[in-house]
Amino acid sequence: MKIWLKYLLGITIGIILGIFIPPGNIIFEDTLKFLNELIINIGRYTIFPIVFFSIGYGTFKLKQEKRISSIYLKTIAYIITSSTLLVLIATGIVLLFSPDRIPIIIENQISYNFPGYKNIFTSIFPMSLFQIFTENSNYLLPVTFLGFLLGYNFSFDKVMTRPAYQFFDAMSRIFYHIGSFIVEILGFGMIILAANFTIQIIHTPQLVLFNQLIILLTINTTLVIFGIYPVIIYFLGGKQNPYKIIYAILGPSLAAAASGNSYFTLTSLIYHVKENLGVPRKIGSATLPVFTLFGKAGTAAATSITFFLILKSYSSLSIGPVGILWIMLFSILSSFLAGTVPGIGILVSLAAMCKLYGKGIEEGFLIIGSIAPILISFSVLIDTITAGVSTYLISHHEKGNKEISIKDFV
Image 1 (tube, rainbow, N blue to C red):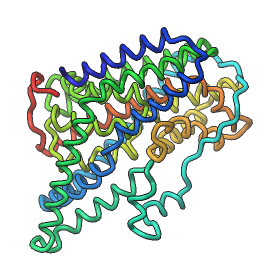
Image 2 (cartoon, one colour):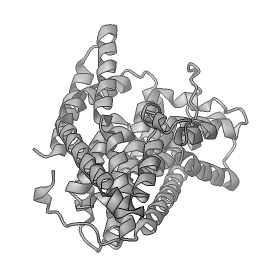
Image 3 (cartoon, rainbow, N blue to C red):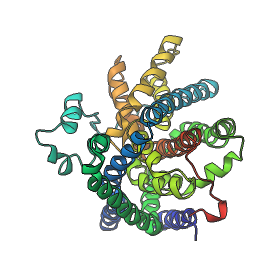
């Protein structure tokens, strides 16, 4: 059975269970919450060693072929372009449909913050290099940077370093194999994730107040996935059937929507990009971690739409051109930091923007707390598809991908 079918079946069962399970059972809800966290941890189990060893070996191979600069510059260009494009589209949608204000809801104070720049730099350069492997379990950048640094230096003496890069190659393949097994069995985990998500949503008393926001996010997501990205794939990917590429990453897309966690989804994305899109490890190992850390076009778009609604709810004044540009700019900039807080990136982005904007809306992000799972799901879904599509296009431009028949998709 195809992986996406396993995931879809698991999500369907989970939604049905979530609908019919009676609310108010504290023991059951605590157990479900624990199982949800456990499934996320299982999905993330191999991602750090996969990234570390794969980027080390991949960097070495790309340096040998003198393609490091080309790959990483293209990756940066796609990250900036995709975030800017999707924020423009999201802004156009919210201005066109002009949703109604949301009544100010009294919510408990919750603190969402990006890690400070000092914490980020000390996580990359700790007092002891070995601390990278014992701390920062929620941040991929330190192991990514170290893996890149090692891979870049494997070539200074190819004879002496051969055992090292052969070891990295072997470990990359081993952890990839373990990760692929986890991806194959996660269909059962989707039942837990979908049930937990469904219970959170249907038991939200104020959900009806956010109908228009949910509709706008749905319109934006549908337009991007089935309209904008297929056009881009068609013209930049050799005028082939673009929906084949979208279909190829359907598995990780479903995992993203169910989990709302980009690190959880990355293992599945790495597997599908290689097995379905034919992207070689040396390219995927470079692009996918960078997109997971900084390529948050979906988060930027959802942040833009939601912040417009927050601002409109707190003020009866219209938002002028300067205000619109401010929202667009900071939606993009804050998304570049969303990878530091996987699972709640959009919430932290909105909290940061509210505090930065000031003018009485410093705690405005609290009004959307009750639909946080929906916001996270939409944002991580588009983030994942953006990473997969961009990696395919970069590989296509580098003439690195192998053509895979649909019948051979995992």
